[in-house]
Image (cartoon, rainbow over all chains, first blue to last red; front, side, top):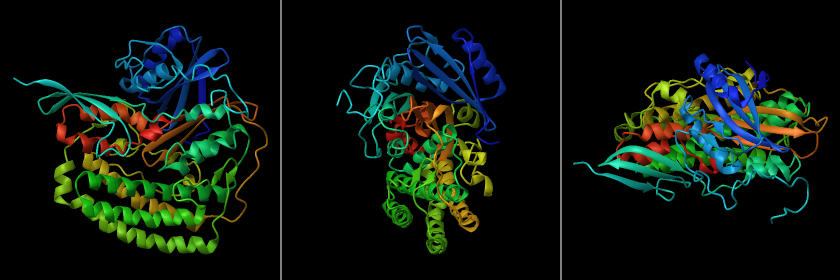
Length: 126
Length: 359
């Protein structure tokens, strides 16, 4: 098995818990979760692995809707959900451990939510 | 009647090389619950990807961690290489493998020293770190840097290792192996180490898998995940078996790291024997477009670098999922029910790298 075999499936947030439940039933391990700000939307990726077979599902949200937590299915997901909450401001409903914004304490609230600067210039906030 | 109290552990504690805070909910001396919090050294490294061109970000990726810096740089390069249609020359893949395994040696020896120190075994700490120096000397000689190597680039590596240096490295491995054998004997058999670590902080196989544990933390609980088996770099041309233990306690995690030192030595020997001649870099053909997850086996476990490009010289996103971050839920589980006096040893047993975890 090489790492070239990767597939990303975009799903509706409505189907998230059902799809994650399927991965759990197949015996997959939660590899990681992360968020990417793409234009005006946020892409949230959920990656799974079984026997080095890597699968990724993605939901796209505007950042204002509450996303159902998968920590009821994968207990360790709380660490990623709290991280996304603190860095991107994504709200998750039903987290098993909610740090209420105190997992990663940053001087600026939700610093990754608005990456306005791109390019080779001095940092605007430097 | 037992009392419930909350004891703050960290961010500064003699056993912690880096800051993590744990709220330990105690009933008498027993930990009922442990809640971690980080954020003391968050550097926002991932956002820098939008401010630097993609070839320059290798330097930032490397600085994610001061211990496994080379593997961070390499994994980032592996991810970008998929987006720029760049096939890395064979010799560069072997060189990456050699430096990765020296990084693992350096990291495991560093951890063994810290672990010995946490147990109050000063001589063993010094012996482990003395041996680590000889590994750092090789990294310095071949890359120019002891901690931050700066030798990986998108499309290959920045410098080659001459044949005579490879021969010298091969004979140096015999010395490292012999001295590692002496240290290993103490870690595996010494009564005081066994009594402080055996049966402590047990993580079952089921919990390790369900909680997403990786690296020696997972392998010590019987979960044989080792990303090197996917064959990235030159690992597909080398033969090895992941080190797996089943006890799931602090001693098992120590045993895995000790045995992995010898696996790394063997892998370096194989790589030196098989390294082909040829160029060590290829130019990227275009700017990065699309997205990709690259995974590698760091000393602490599976590392994931995700990159997303839109065809410009600046990537849209870099996401670094470090092994420590995904081992934190397992740490929370290990601490539940342990004695307060065992907390430092258990925390250290996952080899926490908070600089990595916070990025």
